Every structure is written in structure tokens, then in C-alpha cells.
Length: 320
Image (cartoon, helix red, strand yellow):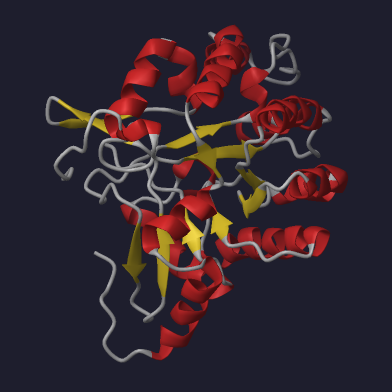
């Protein structure tokens, strides 16, 4: 439940988290919808360079959750993100949703991506976000894997009752989750707004595209009376691209379905850039790792090391 609200001007002082899920829509669509494998396209670099320019102009730093295949294909992009002072996290390797994986195949997704990004930057990677927010009650074992691999925090859980994802009764605040092994991991849930007794998603992705900008500003101010807001976006959401045409080999029904899906993904894209810039110009933002450190009151590395030491605990508080 929400705590008692703070004063209405809290959002003017609170530092919010800006996060970017760095993926290429073309190879993700090809894999998820057509079963075709292939590397990310140059579009992810072009779109990220625009976003990095916005952030540099405003002296804003963000957290970039990067796919391993993007880091592998475009290592200079990863070095650029790092040299600009942004935090790097892992978004999996090939954008495979957790519910499609086993604990071992999930580990095979996140561990090599973490190691690759660390090798490219010389910095430890602390954070993770699952593709499509796919850590849910039925995939809660993924938190244990993340802690074993050495992640200090996760930001994959949307505490809503959704059609494709969600963990409806998950706590809303950034907090430490104790796991059955005795390890722990910090979870930073995505931002929601409670109205009419129901939690609603806000301040990111498709919700930025589909909702009027004024509604997003109102939601951010409302949420920030209780906690920092986590804003998220994808590089492709700022791109005005041609309709998806690569439906070769599909029957008419499947081709029509993928065209409808892609049209939905492109709806209102022209509104995203001004909406995002309006947020960046109005509110203070920082990398998610720094927002978490402020919330938990200690450095990320110290919290991660304490979790690893506690793995031998004889009486852990299990995840519930």
C-alpha cells in the first residue's frame, strides 16, 4: 500500500530514474514473430546516438539496460554510453522472455551479457532488466539466478495485473528481497499509479506513446509523493520508420497479424520525442543505480557483497 502522501512539491526535489532498454526492434520482431535469427541493425545505434545527444545537452545521466547481442555487434556504442557517464545494465542477450527459459538457459542469457559489457567498459555491472518485464510469480526463480550471477539489483517487475506481464501484489517501493538460498537482491519495481483501487502502469514505453503528455506529467507528480519514478523507453520509440514489410514466407493470416502489430507499435511515435524532452527539461533524473543507493542507504557493491556472504545463511526469509 502507498504511504501517506508527502507535500505536493516533492516531485521538484526528488530525483527520478531514467532507464533505456537498448534493443533493436527489427531483429526482435524477426525473432519473436518470424522465428528468424539475425544481428541487430544499425538503427539501434542511430536512435541511441540521438538520445545520448539529448542527455548530453542537459547533463543528464541514465541507466542503459543493453542486450548482449547489441553489445556484441556494436561495441563502440557501449563504450560511448560508458564514456558519457551513464550506467550500464543487462537486458538479457537475445531478448528472450524469462517464461520461455529454464533457470540454466536464463543464466546462459544474462551471465555472458554481464561479462561482455564488463569487458568492454572495465566496470562492474550491477543491474538487470528482463525483456518484456517477464519476471512474474511463475518465474520468481529468476531472482535467485541473478543473485547467484552477481547482480546487485533487478528492475523487471511491473506490480500490475496485466495481460502480458505483471505481479499484481508485489510491493511498490524499492526494497531488498530475501531469497531461499540466503542471498538477497534489490528489486526496483516499475512505476504504477493507484486509482479506483487498481494499479495502473505509467511513465514508460507504450504508456508514454499512447497517453497524453499532460497525463504522464500528472502521474509522475502523483507517484513522486510516495517514491521516485522509474521512467523507461526504448531507442526505437523515437524513430519514425517505414512499416514492417518482411513477411516473406508467411501465410496471409500471419502476415496480416504482424502488420497490425507493427502498426500498433508505430502509433503516436511522433509524439514521443517532445514528450520525453518535456520530462527531461522539467524533472531531475539520475541512473537507477544511484536512485537505489539513495533508497537503501549504502553503496551497490557493499550490498552485493553482503548478499553473497549471506548465501550460507541457515534461516533465510524466503521470497513470498
